[in-house]
Structure formats: structure tokens, C-alpha cells
Image (cartoon, rainbow, N blue to C red; front, side, top):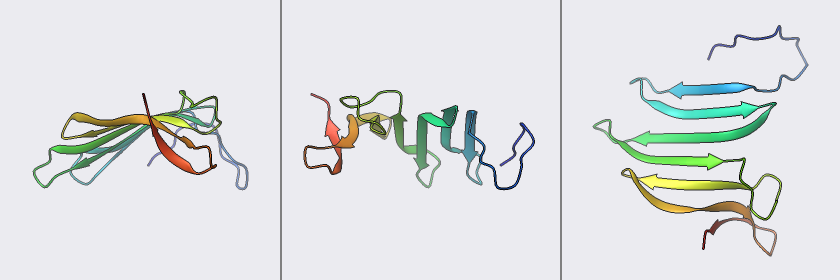
Length: 103
């Protein structure tokens, strides 16, 4: 990965800003991330079968929260280009992090 931005100083954190894409050795996108002031907005991940066809694609939208829970996010899970699940990853009533499906 290449970084083009402000000069870095050892020991000082830098907030991520912008879009980042990662590719596998075949040139296929495996992750796309978008950050604003260090906070993730959208993160997408992809996996492929042996023929190069996209078999899974997950979209995590951190701009959408479940009941205003900090760090919760909306997620869509695709398999073979079809939406399989959709909901929120959030804490349930027992305080455990779980997928909460949309009604």
C-alpha cells in the first residue's frame, strides 16, 4: 500500500481519510474502505471462486446505527450476487454483539 499525504512523525497517530482499495494477486478487488476523519464509513469485502467469479460480497455501512448504538453498523451479505441477509451488527438485550435482522 502506498501513502500520499501529510508528513508522518514516528509515534504519532494519523487519522485515515479517503478511500482505500486492496487487490489480490489476480488483480481482483478484495476490500474497499472509505474513512472520514478516522471513522469508517463503508467497508466492502469480496471473495472469489476458482474461476474468478465473485462468490461473496459484504457491505458494512458504519453511517447507519442500530438504535443509536455507537460502533453498530448496517450490513448486507451477498452470495453469488444475490442478497442473502441484511440487518445490523449490534449489541442485543444481553449485551452480546450479534446480527440483528431487519424486520
